[in-house]
Length: 138
Image 1: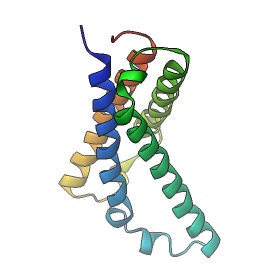
Image 2 (image 1 turned 90 degrees about the horizontal axis):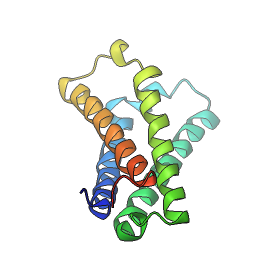
Image 3 (image 1 turned 45 degrees about the vertical axis):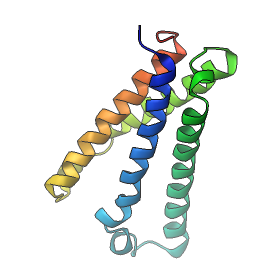
C-alpha cells in the first residue's frame, strides 16, 4: 500500500518546486512592461496578491514537509488541512485548464513545457492531498 506520509512529504516538495516557477512569472511575462499602463494602486495590488499566494504555497509546503506523518494519520485537523489543500489545487487546476489561454502569448518552448509541467504538478497535488483526505493512503 502507498505510504501517505511519503506522499505528503513529496507534496511538500512539489509546493516548493511550484514556487520556483512562480518566481519566474514576473520576468517571463514581463510584468514591468505589461503592468505599466495600470494605475500605481493596481500594480501594487497585483504584486500583493502574488506575494500572498506565494506565502500560502510556502505554508502548505512547510506544513507538509514538517508534519507529513501527522497529516497522513487522517485525524480531524489533518483531514481538514488535506481537504483544503486539495480544494485549493483543484481550483487552480480548473483555472489552468479553463480560464488561462496561453495560445495568444508568444512563449518560448521551455516556458510552454514549464506551463504543462505545472499542470502535472497540480494534478499530483489533487491526487496526493485529496487521496489522503479520503483515507486512500495509510
